[in-house]
Image 1: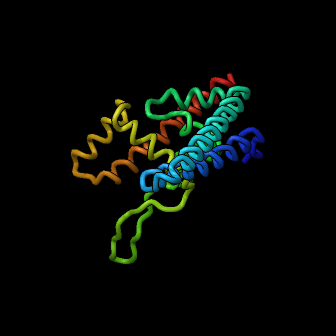
Image 2: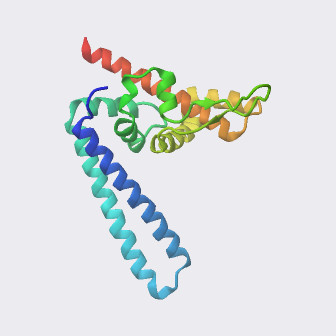
Image 3: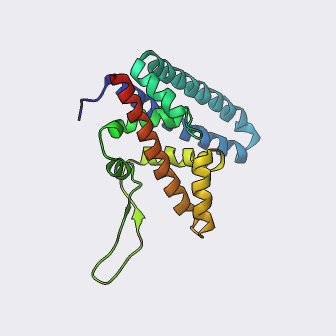
Length: 196
């Protein structure tokens, strides 16, 4: 594997901080719903502060991505897929750098989307996903949720699974896997076009 790119590491660190602040913002908004009127103004002040910090971090990530030609092209390629927004694209770039180097089965397992069996002797257990990179998995879930409604390919795939009586979570994991494989193929095509 090539050494991690310093710019990609910066994007990853900023994304981690963005996650911390997003969690804090959600907590403050929840507090505001149940607080006494005497402290509401302080909570609103904190919400404005955290939102301002979030905006600044996102601006810094955009600058980093746009000033690096390779990252800019990867970001544009990923966001060209319906359902994949800025945060999902940045997360794949920063947290799944191996996407161009591993086989599709390995990249799916690395993201924690490969179903592992739980068989022993004659016992055949339920296949479940486990392990992998939780940050990638959670952002792919949101992307797949959007794609299952607006992306014609993912929507048709999800609708077929639902028609077969598959549970919602099972359908979403399958959609996440299909979306990730599609993103990998797009990035590989982009890589070949850059090489030629």
